[in-house]
Length: 640
Image 1 (cartoon, rainbow, N blue to C red):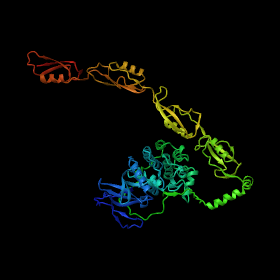
Image 2 (image 1 turned 120 degrees about the horizontal axis):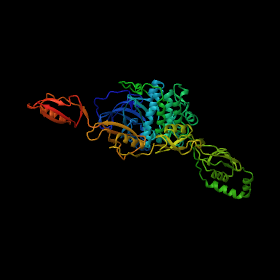
Image 3 (image 1 turned 90 degrees about the vertical axis):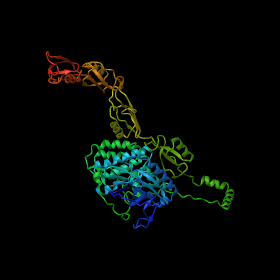
Image 4 (image 1 turned 180 degrees about the vertical axis):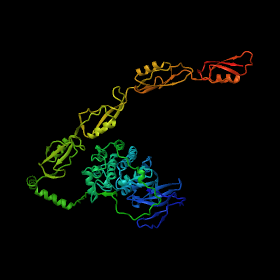
């Protein structure tokens, strides 16, 4: 889907079907010339576990595209093909600047393909290989844009399931684009062929995935947290000689703070990485939107760095495909689970008949031996997760003696259900042996911080630090608490709530709006007093008016009767009376010309003829030129 700046083909020769040629590369099973009579294939630019990616030219829309051609072994799996169609259709519905767009998909001659947006840039994996580590501000930029993409996809019900540096592209403009939405799920579903199998990129798999639980949006957040660690340190948080060894660390160990490997990483980013890589998904941010808000709140204090675009140089040639390298750190692997074998007994009627006759013959002797000489054994039943009373009954029915231990807190098992059993389930015991049950007390209670009077981001931080989450957020008008501050919380400060639980809060919208009174026609002082009495601020401007007396309000904004919050500003325009201007000079003008000019200014003209003169030209005026007059004033001119 990416390349390092390529030249557009001037023309493309398109055939009606897919053409196969003998490959010159050692690893290419076939080379494509034209796909579906429309896409002219130019170069292979990537290869992976699902297939190969080609740079191509769309002859219909005259644009570059990237085509992912799936391996033939996947195309032969009917179940995978159906999942591929369904997931490709869902991925094509995603329309976001940070997601690699899916333009088309289909199959030709048994070749299944997906046509995607061609991204002229580099993958984050390539940037890490070149740079070693990214500056904290650069890493935060990659993460924030990726979270924007995940936020959009999660709202559409699509979970990526395979977030890793290889699937994050950076364009020459510094835009991050997430690739392979939909394909990850189709591949994972196709390879779950036996109980307990987990498929994915083990370095980025969340604990719940490794334990066989379904993925949800918080699973993508864990993977992005691992990517964040790698961006800031240049290394993975967990390594091992086998995928199983890495998976064990993901389940049992915490992701270390990035600053332990790179002291330049600030504590704020350490905290963010810790929050999204919590082992218990309930302790992670509820959504990509929340994780993004948290990150943006921290990124503003990071030291400035070169923009992402500076890390993606302009080049003009795509290197020729090289032989496959050894598996990179983010290769997709399959971790096998445990399998069980069923023994299918066969019924041999002759043997059964002999045994039956023997039992009848032995009779009471056999019963006595069973009752008094042979030990009676039983396996500890499965009771973890059962209600306490049901578990006690189950063990009692099995002939075991139950001992109840002191309860323990748990975020996985509900209160009054069995958390642990000793000896473990499946252990073979003699009837009458003792089994100890440890009941769950539910999530551990933690003190609830006082968040009233705080802003929503501050309340969220305080609750998160206490191991709690912001629940429903409601907004109400309040006369006493400023806008944007918490008015009420569902659990009072200093009380206790189960860790990981939601605390609902109410945010003030400020005072209740009231109707704006009518002040048009009032004097300025009266209008200001009226508005200030309702709690509004007043902004005054002035303009000339020939219709409204000086000092009287001409207009107001908002208009009379509009519901408006006290504390907001009402603007009024006050009349300065008719416009004033300097009296022009008309001496020397012809009579008619002078009268016309003065009347055009709104002045009233009185003409007097000097006795004994013809009265054709102005010889005197009153007021004199330069005197300040206003429309409607009387002007005398004398003509001779």
